Image (cartoon, rainbow, N blue to C red; front, side):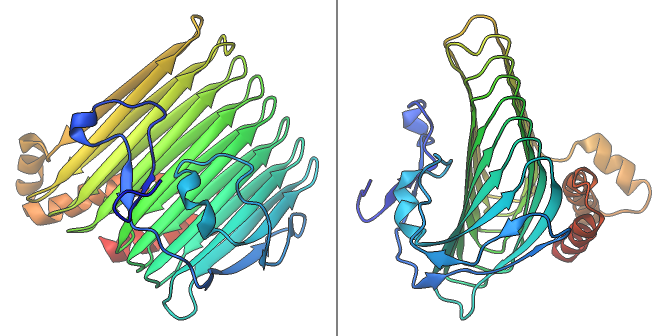
Length: 346
């Protein structure tokens, strides 16, 4: 949708709070000149990774950023995990000469498979975009770990997933980008007993923007979603977090919950937290919560009594919020890299 040479992305499923301009994000469209450079390696050699090529379909699974960016993704690759196999695939996403780039990754996890996909962004482009679409068949477990600490002016990170019966989709995201980030994820919990967990840690640099959209559609019975985000905003930073749990008719026995904790440091910080629960089914549970504010005076007094300045105290707390994610990766190599990047940024 074009409005004054902009496209509408990260839209809420239903309009609300129009006066506060939180229903969607507006960004300028662009045409990528080439695909992102992707280096992919299977750890155990069981997952099959295709070469990056043009012409594949990237729109079969709905995503969080939305169809307005479909035209960006002209080049793609496929990662396939066969039935009852276990593997980890590491990916580095970069750009060759700093120009606009985009690519997509189709992930097919067959029944009973266990696949971990680690994506590390190292792009240094004007615009960089990556779409990851996941199909998790019955009993499959897919873990998506994304680390954005690149220097692109604007990054678009778009994800979509459909789960089969008793399948699970787990997402861990670390956002430390030096530029602006648009991030969206949409999960269709189609199979009975399937689940979706989402954990994001972020640090928004001074004067930069982070716009996030997380949608969990409960379709099957006894499905579960757990959406969590935690991070820090510095001087002049702007962040929007849209978290939607949609408990649709027929998803009896399902439960969804979401929570965000935001630390505000400095002046002119803009934070928008938009929790949304939609429900057309009776036998379900939905809950949300948020904590937004500066460091408590009691905590500052504790640090100062031990000779730690306010500035150092802020760094310690911001770092601790991010490092909690490292414990959830279940991958020693990735956790070590996350610790290193967090230390460098903080």
